[in-house]
Image (cartoon, helix red, strand yellow):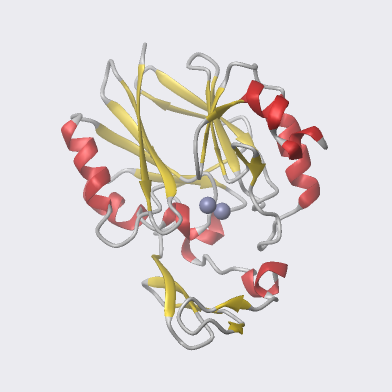
Length: 250
Ligand SMILES: [Zn+2]
Ligand SMILES: [Zn+2]
């Protein structure tokens, strides 16, 4: 059974949001809807245009640039939100542990005034924000509803006649996952593996050691497997084995 795939870059960075459907039954999932205000309509538009039934919203990890559209998408479609059990707490509290992480202990350049100052993390019932040293909101994301179901390594996510296997790939966060289909030769790697690089490990509950183990795990996949990362261009496992400097160092 063939699969239908659309990539919609959304949000500030941008983040790759993937719409994935079983062509036979039109049952679909959305991976990482990290939308800015109003961008949810692009995802909904794609779902409507292709006449899909959205079953699940799957987050490769709990960072708000991957979860900001969960709330609106769930409100409109009723789809269940799935995330690994160790990142589930981040859905409703995306700054959990962030202030203690190395990334937020150093000053950042304010895009408005240009001064190097500490970034402030702010959260209320609706939104998570980063606020620059001079008090300007530089980034904000809508808080997700809690998970409807939590995932563990080896779980399978089925929609129509299609199935993705959950591979626990921590390192960027504690509950990062990759989603793999052997039949379709594709893997969605979130912020674990990207073309020529890997996700940063200095954020809350990140780990360089775990990242190495996760990259090793992914390198076991067949050479021709296409890698769809959370940010940037797609690649293949074979290409990353050859060209990715971090993979060379494993
Ligand atoms: Zn991330
Ligand atoms: Zn990301």
